[in-house]
View 1: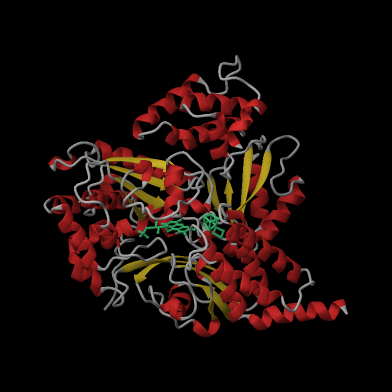
View 2 (view 1 turned 180 degrees about the vertical axis):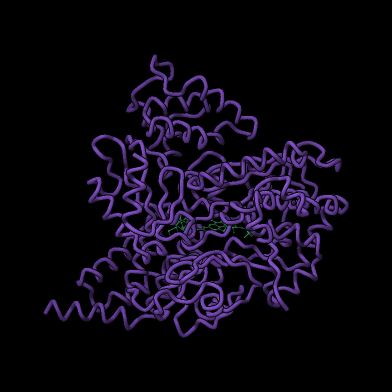
Length: 425
Length: 172
Ligand SMILES: Cc1cc2nc3c(=O)[nH]c(=O)nc-3n(C[C@H](O)[C@H](O)[C@H](O)COP(=O)(O)O)c2cc1C
Ligand code: SF4
Ligand code: FES
């Protein structure tokens, strides 16, 4: 069965950012259908579709919505996660560049389903152009009566505001984002309480990724069965894959969930640059670890990367590295990122990333020691939050990436250390 | 402790040389309606000040504290967390070079070197004429353009160091 693009169907259409063009192509037509349903019915529909979060964690969207308190007097907030700062990820930017109204339509129907009355779109500060595109789209949508009071005569009120971040990866973590929304430093909060119970300004808050929300109008239109018919059993729907690094055609490709990493590289991204061989690929943002060249047949669905030692699919931002890439330097780059972006609240994260960076710099400078690798692995075990050692998942990203690289390319790391000790003698 | 900084800040909220102009103040106050607290607008206000003055001065902290009805310590607490705000004055133009993984393996180090050779500035340094500051940045969400640059507000895919050379000349 051939796959027709869903989320990217307006890409390449002239003036696709304009409301008139969007509406001409069927945009905003999920609204009457949604308003004809009760919010809970809509939530059930999204639950039945199997839609899982596209922001990195892959949690069921419909399920998350049911965690909101029943009969809350309000306000309930919708916080749209457009922080997109995970290295290798640029899919939400692509959606905004080409089809900002699709994002807004997703926000309206999802806010209706969750009874939210104010939606904040949290966009990373560096996306200057995208903030302008989005603001323009929001203004247009207000004018056409898609936001504000009594939307399209439905009796439903929703305000929508664009909120710019200011350069901090950690504001992509949902509670870091809520702090930034409140005008504070983006320090993740200790959970529970989860945002659904106590989120922005102490009120129940739905946090969803841009791409997740973009799927919702299509589910309303085509039904849950249609959505589950795309992709794999546990990973339903279309997915935007971002691919970058040493490939001929880096970019965003919309495909059913479950395409293999090899097909993504060979069939879609034009193969390896300069006829080189692939040495490894990050499956979905640098937090997720790395797939070895032997593991490229991995399906890029929510389970595939996890079955190969990675943390998961993450953001599906794939970074491809060719045979000439030094894996020690690649890991150093990743650890540098996490050291810079650690918010500093938890000692294992703040200090651990610093120690790891120092060790890697030492190895790269030719002064590595034999037990460096084992020490780093031990540090990783002490760092992850999965067993509950840190406030948020950033530390897991550091630890997972480091462990994966060292385990999957151990010989290369050892050779680097040994060549160093040979010189030192 | 953040609240102890008050004594060390220069400037007063009602100083003669205000940095938050009336026009800025109006814009800030118009934003208040969107949120249940005034503090929520702080990031927006800081962007305005940073854009106009290329820094957040003591005086600005004082004034913003007053406008947002929070303490100067709270303003400092927020602003010091974010990479886009600077207490030191930055150059008129910001050359943001992405140094994260995709850009690293696609040659961002050559771009850093080019800037160093051409303008004689290293990371977070500003040219003597105040025209450029070099800012190494973590992934700017444009990895398909690697090595990517954020020149002020615009993303660019840089295919050669000559292209960067031209871009800098055009921006100057
Ligand atoms: C360190 C860290 C950074 C994150 N960055 C982002 C991000 O940039 N964008 C995003 O949508 N989710 C990000 N997340 C995931 C969010 O916490 C949250 O799970 C997500 O926005 C929920 O939306 P979804 O269920 O629709 O995916 C990040 C998580 C962590 C731990
Ligand atoms: S794990 Fe790291 S980033 Fe997350 S809250 Fe702790 S210190 Fe901050
Ligand atoms: S790694 Fe440079 S833009 Fe993403």
